Image (cartoon, rainbow, N blue to C red):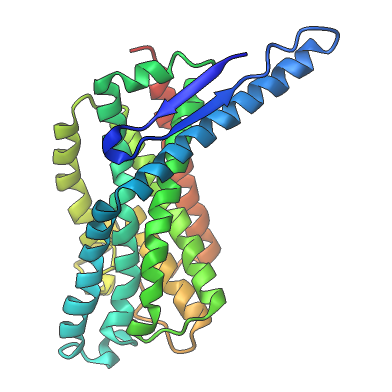
Length: 303
């Protein structure tokens, strides 16, 4: 019987998830039993890491509230102030409605990026080395980190969905489901990209510096604050390859799909045409999958 124990620090709420193996399955059907036992161990390891992230989220209520406060202030204060200055006719919708997808993206972005920072600090503290002693693959551990980051980021974004009524959108169940699905895709992609960066770095300070250099331009080129059509030609072309721009455009088009007259000015365009919604979703998923695959290959290399 093999155990994998995952503990969270006391500062995030102590929690222990025990993952038990089922032996090596030797016997007449040893090969099949062994594979089944190994699969159960891998799944339980992922579950343990996801559970750890959920316990941290539940134990850091003040920190979570402060992370949610930032986009809420942007939405209500900045959005409310500029709504009186920016005419509705210039965007097709009110400015707060236009701003809402960008604030959803800002909400899921921070906890998704934090997964990369935690991976670096866990490696520095020796926690990752302890995990590597477990009878599971390195890729499984990385998948657990990605799944936990995606779930916690989506959970925080879901809280902001409670404000749809304040920006002039209806509390429509299908609309909420569409926005939630878009946030899952965005959270997965950002988490995978953060892990890709984290497995290549050794210091959290370097990670923070790169984030400041890379993430802020990507956020401003996402179309979350102003229409992409207002950008210069070269910037508009860069925005067309920006994963954050794809995610914001996906969320905005989900709103337009369910709310008549909710279509704002066109966002991402390729060669003067707006890509189909399924293509945007598939491309966003592909970016996250490729990033996670590369991160897994890099993480599998011995330190």
